[in-house]
Length: 127
Image (cartoon, rainbow, N blue to C red; front, side, top):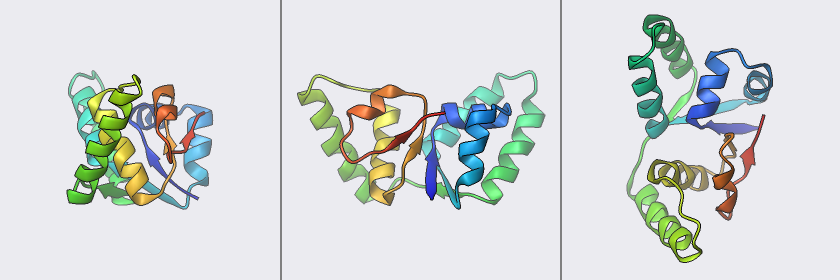
């Protein structure tokens, strides 16, 4: 099974959270949205253990796929955001981009954020 990592999953794995690490280790394919990398690098920039997390992230990126945003992602983003607004269940904009990438690549998302459950066609894995 492949999966996409949300920022909170990336943080949990970096910190050795047992349940998140177990889900991660079962995956034969791991993908990280470029949006998640931006959010995580922002967190690293504020950390006292900046160098440790930067090294760990570089190792993870080397064995993962980084998902970039393209025209197909942008179309999915617009549709998803409109659907969420119409249904009265908006979610943070960055998370709409992440959801669009999950749908585009047909992969589940490892995340603790329950608002992803509002998105049809997206499977969220919890830990």
